Image 1 (cartoon, rainbow, N blue to C red):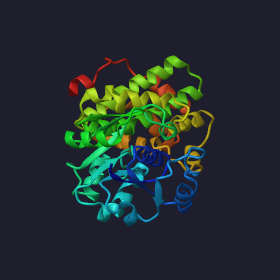
Image 2 (image 1 turned 45 degrees about the horizontal axis):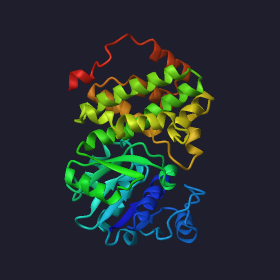
Image 3 (image 1 turned 90 degrees about the vertical axis):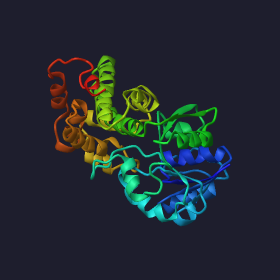
Length: 340
């Protein structure tokens, strides 16, 4: 059994902390909100982010980073991706030398266009790359918290670390696969949120299941193109962090990013939508980073481009749809084959 710290007590961080505690690990959950600390410690529930779902009695929470991280062997970071730099920098001095560091956040840093592995290399350099891994895959937090069957992947440039994390977190209802493609797992986990916004808008406009399937499939193609340009294996995108997470996020009723897309079809202002919710729809921020990164690398990402234009440039949804539909015909694997 391990001493585990989970940094970030949103729905996903809480679900992971609860899972680790159910396995018998000694787990402390760091929360920014005092009411979350109180709720977890006194009522064994995160009433703010996972209401109505019981947590193991042995799970404890703290608002003190130093206390949370003291003596821990595994640290799991799960804040919103755009806050990872600040949170990990604040935690860096308290992370024990030799600790295994996992990042469960999904996104690309909007201000720098960096993958989260690059952010962590700057904030906790002693962890990267030999003690740094990334957890991703199709995993709604509420279902993990309830103990429903889930498959995820842990990726690291060091396969030994991925296997260590696998041994620590694997369970019959939470199967953990290992990968050495940290870049691919990160790109898949980040970009699926952008495509899910488009899928939600497609459903909201009642364009049909054919159109939704096209969005998912062509979305996978552009995720793969960007991933390969960043050094990932194209095969990674056929796995849990690629097509698995993409299908879940584009079709599941619990998807925050799909819900954002549905709201766009109703005419909701996207910034007002984001401002009115405590839980973050990461696709709102990641689409801006993906748009800039695609331009920088010369990668064709038409769906992500239109999502960015709608969310950040005020383009009408029907106009974005028209631009996608009127694109010139192309070879299906164009770009992916060229970069293999």
